[in-house]
Image (cartoon, rainbow, N blue to C red):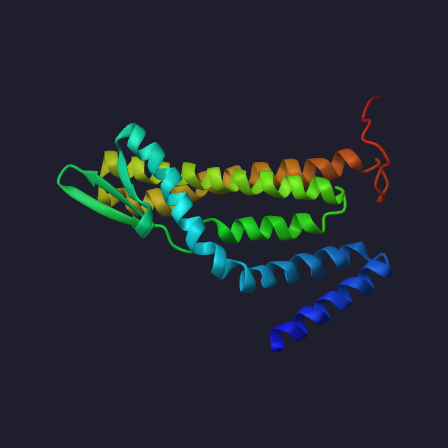
Length: 199
């Protein structure tokens, strides 16, 4: 009941910001609220299928190279280096669901795009985050395969995250920053009616 009340309050204040054309507050309030409600209602349902899918997709690269094996039913990657072996469990944090929901929440209230564009870019963006996560897992598995279990910390905490977040920054730049610059008139704070940037 408390959650429903919070949701109704969120909707009401969102409508207030929209009617008042307070688009900055609409973006902040809408993005944060949508993220919270998605984490409460969608994440528990989507997390298990997503981790299995991530594990299966990462396993394809592992089988092709022979660097590791995947067990999607357990959401686990098995990497062997000589006589050493390690099992990598793909859990809530490794699934990429937090990054996907944060991206979708921000894009839903990003007024540079119309609704159809936001839907399409939401799907494409989530796909890119998904594949960025696959690349991250492949790099982690490959590093452990060549350098052993001692390389796990560096591969997972440093190298893997740098790669994943570098790809995420590229996504955010093209979807949010670059589009904002292109569609905004130079010297103004209102959106252009067209995207012609010729001089």
